[in-house]
Image 1 (cartoon, rainbow, N blue to C red):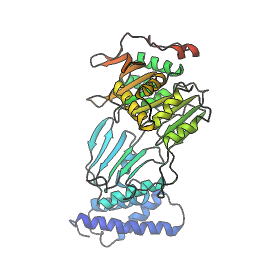
Image 2: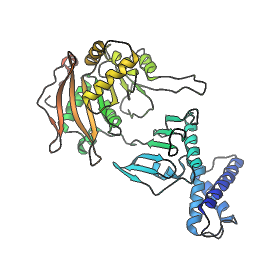
Image 3: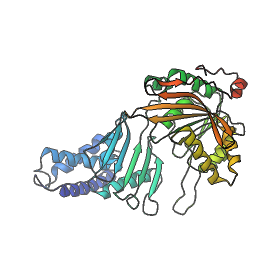
Image 4: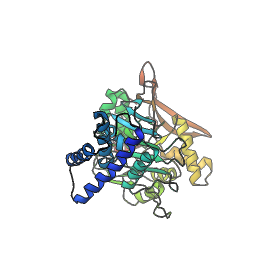
Length: 411
């Protein structure tokens, strides 16, 4: 291949040599190290008559392309998946790739050679977690082997080409002290929430997409006394609960191609009640499973934690009401009574213009006065002052008193 040959020729050669290398690896019948595979690829590339006159940059690109396609499940995205500072990889079709690094979103000067390459990578990732992505199943949401969350939409649904998101989580668990240092939360509010968890208050974390809800849930879960039995239920396992000992973790499952085998979050919450839980953690509620979660909180499982998408504490409660009503034909008054009795605190998070994440509000859900929701705001974020106490005290203190826990933070 002469210098200046088209990119299409390079793509074709990479595909042909990738197939050749895979066959060579398979024929050896043994596990090869990365170094051995790289040596094999270099030998094939440097001896190929179509490449011998190419410049070093082209040869390097071909070698790298074959190595990633052969050895790395994420193809050209692999180097970014190995960067611990990158929290999310976003692919909007083959030519549009973004990363989030330390809170800043950047477009990469990178592209898949063809849409088919991107689709093949998505199928490969889905296959590794026993899922499918095709025209019949155009959406897949799953957990990868390293704990990252993988979400993909096929081009039969995504109009500008296959879309793919990989959300990565810190290898080292973030602590409350880390959040205080990052000014995500004030020390006074952190002390209050830590004592509220120990006291068995039911806490719901609300916020928009990528506002830090899962990270914050992890931090609050680390405040649970180690002797307690915790049942964790998630759509895709994301939580890091290394400090807890008596833990059962469960994950939902989608139906197979025959529409069999589905396990819903509602089913798992119902099953968890037979496992003698002290607390139940639901990673995120999105629909009718909120009925089971609220009922669990109202049947003696104090100290439960969950998250959901909402623009404010009031908006989050309204969403919970709507989700509850999709699952049961109850009068709205009864639904509100159930929610008001179940939830004690709502912690609302948000992203600031500088892309940092902040706790914007901590509010006590007091209940309803007729149709009006009653919120007792305990902490409120102000731009020039940060997260500060409002001066209000927690009204529902029975759980803390029963457990003999002193609520810290002067609230």
